[in-house]
Length: 221
Image (tube, rainbow, N blue to C red; front, side, top):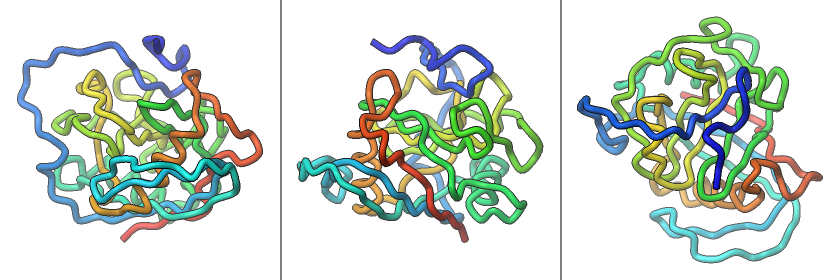
């Protein structure tokens, strides 16, 4: 069983305490996306194949160096400030961003966490608005896998760290800002997410230390 938090503050965490919310929420699938982004990624591990819906269909079981691209759509109509932060960090137009950073925490049946490009261990990162910025809103919910959401160290502590869900994580609603998703139908991208998930452990560490998942390039339009 996972602990209530990844680690003690100030490390950017995903709080696992369940919340019961009374306000109206929107499912992520209802948003309209205009910003597109991508990560080119390298890692060491097996390849997990998926179908068009993202459901795993099998694995080759071979641990070796891999590379590929994940395409994203950002929900900039619902969370424009959060989406713009991610977009600008992908393009590195502010002089800093995701290229060269790693996925430092991977937990199977939960999520992949990355975006700490200053320290690489979950204690760093920064936004384009300063070190931290406030939670924009919680209209979008963690209602499916392959969603992009902001990692944080508590309310209003968003920086650059994010996570990609691999399952429904509704207990995170109201605590983490959902701002995008892996592009539906991007079989390669969804396969990479599931392949990276297969490299993780329940403690968040990685099985294969020789090839930590790394964002070699990123971009957006």
